[in-house]
Image 1: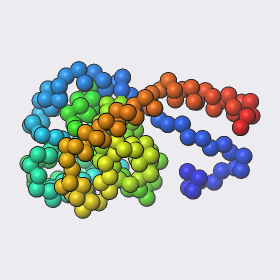
Image 2 (image 1 turned 30 degrees about the vertical axis):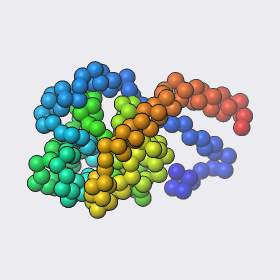
Image 3 (image 1 turned 135 degrees about the horizontal axis):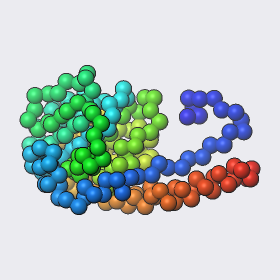
Image 4 (image 1 turned 30 degrees about the horizontal axis):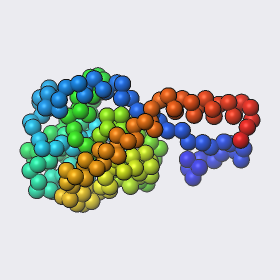
Amino acid sequence: MKDRYEFRPECRHEVIPHGHFDDLWSSASEISKEEAESRLGLPAAEFRLGMVGTPRVDKHTQAVLDGFAATNRDDIQLACWSLSYTERVPDDSRIFASRYSEVDAATYALRLWSCDLLIFPFDPDGEMLGTGTAHDAIGLGLPALISDWGYLTEVMGDAGIPCGHRSATIEACLTGLTRAKIETAEIACRALKAAYEWVPIASKTAELFDRVVLDEP
């Protein structure tokens, strides 16, 4: 933000993290992943890579589709609910994709819970400042494949498995992806959860307001 915008010299800059919404999605965890995929009409998969959220110019959905299609693994499935009207879906029986549309919280929770990990292929040089889907992942303890966008690397930490944002790097990441890597990232993701609870974030926000009002450093 400091690079992009001009601020007055006395402007205060502090970073308080965005919280997660586990309470909204936790009802999905009361059922099995098998039940979630059945309700969504998805066939069973050894592990499923999910792509959720609104289409964005800086979100390289086509790279995910093409990179996934270039792999020859039969144990991975891609469920993409983020298509705009510009992406071309490869003819690949392992890919289940649909155009983005808003859904209710229960359906969104089912989509999250049916996945073993998510993917966030955001352009590191794009115009976005953040994405709430990373915090949805943290709320449910879902690890993710992430680009090297600074927001993702900072927020996800070891819960993110680097995959770049180009089809070639995504293909390479998927080719070398193992269950052990996913489990390690999942452990790291669950460890992040407490830091993104709303209660400590609210306390940090209140403390900042107090310092601003009292003109304290």
